[in-house]
Image 1 (cartoon, rainbow, N blue to C red):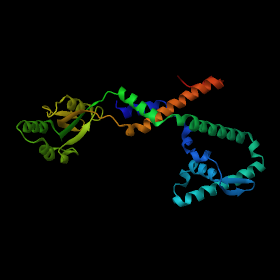
Image 2 (image 1 turned 135 degrees about the vertical axis):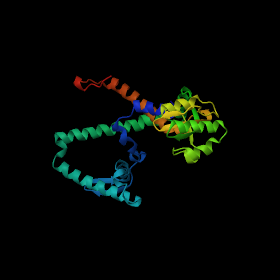
Image 3 (image 1 turned 90 degrees about the vertical axis):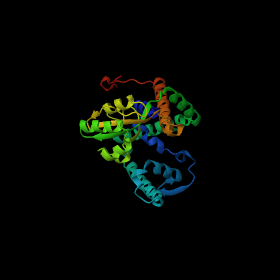
Image 4 (image 1 turned 135 degrees about the horizontal axis):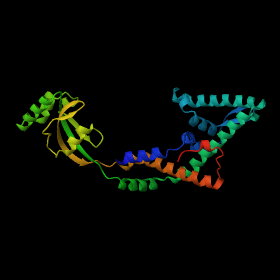
Length: 282
């Protein structure tokens, strides 16, 4: 397994919950000083900070509009939201049980996301990410890759005849261009570099057994037909760079930090599950 696959697997096992999807929309502007008033609705105001927050939360809603129009659209939507909210409060909607539950959930979710952004995210620094990259990179043993060419034909007889031509000194690339039925034929049968798991098993096993510069002395049968394989190069698979791995490293570290914060907070606050049927499996 290479580094990127290892990181992807680690992140997938400990993915952040869906409640955090909107966390990234909590831009720093949403917490900044909200000085500029953009609109008044009764005794309420909509500030530039409110609009910044709405632009983040409702970004997909305004994607289809020209960029210059999006802020105006978002402000108009905020006005619509607030005028109906005022009407709802006048009629006491905020006291209805289902709406009270929804308000409390949204409040808890906003505080949860704010805690994640203000207390957890800032701790994942570039320096720590680079250190973690070096640690994860050191754990991975590079896989071997081969660069190979092949000639694909329909019958074993055709393949054996081509092997005889190769043994007589004919050029592999020219024979591939002339006789191969595979899509790589016009390119001299070139498959480039590949590692374990990239080819069908019969082909892969035969290719990795060959020494550099050697071709298969017997046809290799797969579901596609009969192959003659030549290995041009062998190497250790190049390790991904920090820049290639950076986002996955960050996601892994955020996920771990979030998990630790949740575990600590559950212990401090106290959690009692009263319905055993809703207990998660171990």
